[in-house]
Length: 221
Image (cartoon, rainbow, N blue to C red; front, side):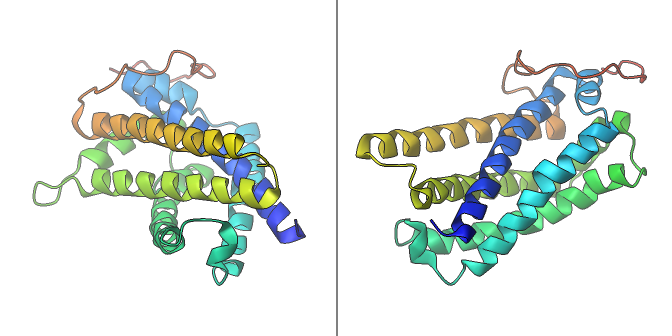
């Protein structure tokens, strides 16, 4: 495996872990603002961790993706998937930039406090244009593009890394990635629907998600 493929492999794996954790922790919104704000309470350590473990691999993977754009067959995917991956990458990039500007960047710059994130997200998700919740729909499409692109990236990374040596192992990993992506989309979709409409489609929040550090904000409904 050449250095570029190894670099991409070790870039996409932490990103996959982050997306998994981010979807689960964001689902705490279905337990109410107080718990959500405690989970996402911002600290210098968390900010530094996000920059190092998330943003750095993300930039590295984006650069690698641009370099590999002319080599779709090297990803060991079905003939129709490389083109779809490129379109999902475009949607993902637009979604990611919009999301970072909307919330994380404002938090890093100090213009949005941690205990206001739930209210801001709810207001944005529930806003409508001609009765259409465009922001919520954008999040659904962006989440689907993110999970699809990440799933195919993980699969391709495992293939080119030489990790998969047996057909059975390959099949189990493929269906494991598909099932995990589907479950994450259901959880993320339920969270988006709750923020947009107040309707709970799932259990309020996974029981294994910690509440996070105590928050000084007063409890919210």
